[in-house]
Length: 441
Image 1 (cartoon, rainbow, N blue to C red):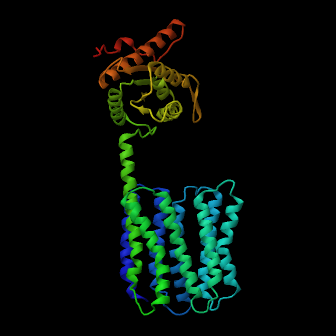
Image 2: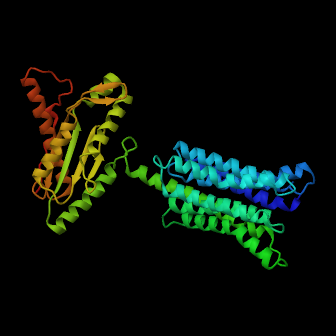
Image 3: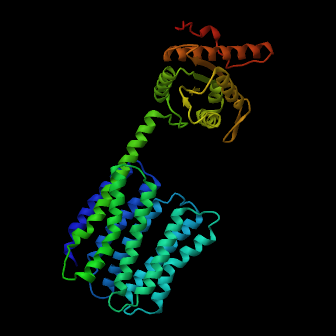
């Protein structure tokens, strides 16, 4: 048993425990795959303690040491693939796991390089290329062809060097491990193209990890007398572990900031973000001398939906309304949920009262048709109030009041119209309850 590996095992176990603690706060598919990958790295250190045992048990330990390290790299790649739900992507992932494991097993259980190694080397790249070509119509992402290129090159390299009597098997092994972690470097660079410490540390760590086997092979060939401690070669592992923990923390902070400024149900900006954007929009309009319009949309029969069908259906209605409203609002404008059944829209320049009226009518028209919400079909309406800066008000609070009052007026007019035509509405608002507020200039 190689007792000198215990400190590395202990350090890695502590890092995995820290990683699991951070990942548990916001579990995702990516964080779960990362955690499994680090468990594989820990298994790699455990098996490395026994790989110097003679006989078949030593060969088994050596195979587990190498296979778990390779599987971890492939899991990290898998977690960062944006199209991993594709069936062909799963097929490529499984083929890579199988072909790499087969070659590493042969290396530890066969004394001589023979035709089985040739077949195993071909399998490193051929299945990946075949699956990619067959499925190129359904998925032709650049990352997929990067994987195809990497493993096709790996297969060709292994075929060339594996019969070298001096260093062939070692070079093949170094190439397999280096390819897996260079693939991690490329995929993480693609997935985390942002200027943060977590992204920089992780991508740099993966590159250094991939270069460990290249530099190690070069030093062994050119300067065999130079000895480097194993702890030095393991440094990139710890660097990547720290980088991934930073990535998780950055994602959790970003998620918390998003929840603080967005409605949890619809994903739209909440009242806090809406007020901030309205204040900025009015300030820009003052500087440029342009108009800004504010629309307040209130759902007419939402309480009735909640009372008769339950709050679950009511939540589905709000989500559906948010989706519909998104289709009619420009990206430059702001759509927010500012109340239980109230939505607001900020129309920035270029805009006008006529444009705001058209947008308001189109939003109301969207809700004139029945909405499909799960197993239920509901019919709700909406009333909209429009206020334009600076014509209706010059301050934010007064502009909001003006839009609210006009929304109440629209709701009252709709109720009067229903009563006049002989229809009854249990959700008709009480116009006498509307507060009388004076608007400033």
